[in-house]
Length: 77
Image (cartoon, rainbow, N blue to C red; front, side, top):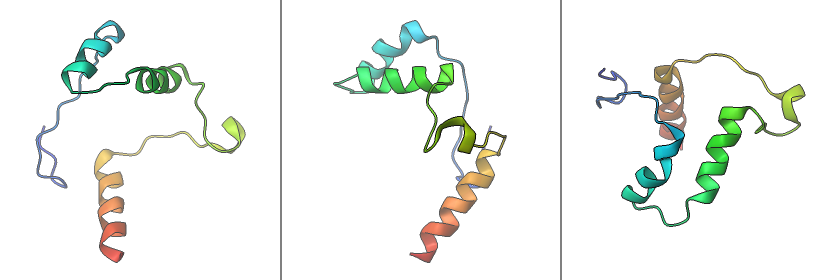
């Protein structure tokens, strides 16, 4: 897949949890626990921002939309 916003190739794939540690070490990470805990929290649905689920909104937004908004915001500063 080629992103028209970033002009970079992007590939999504499921990464089995049992491979995370070796993958993160190969990427140069030293302290793995916080990242693994964060990913577990998102995957299990127990990480919520601000006032929890009552104030969070869940939906689907295409990556292109998010990146365009970030680029637009960065160009204003």
